[in-house]
Length: 67
Image 1: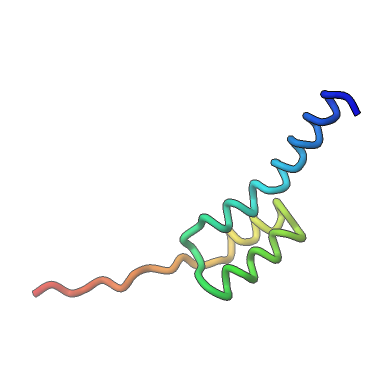
Image 2 (image 1 turned 90 degrees about the vertical axis):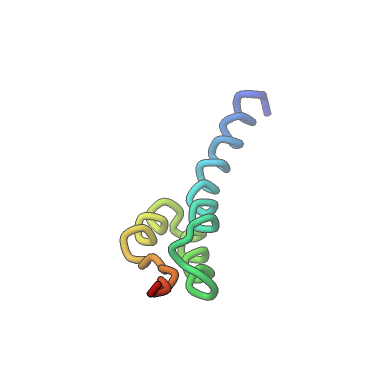
């Protein structure tokens, strides 16, 4: 294995891991819902991430009413 092949494999692994890290660091989901999306993204990579972005609803913190 030469250096060029090693660089190619490392880039392919990084390209595969990017959507997984995007789901992990996202604030859209929490708990078991995030685990579900991690599994989907693990198996479907970029397509799973696109599904996540298009279907996962963002959780909002409840606003306190100030009087």
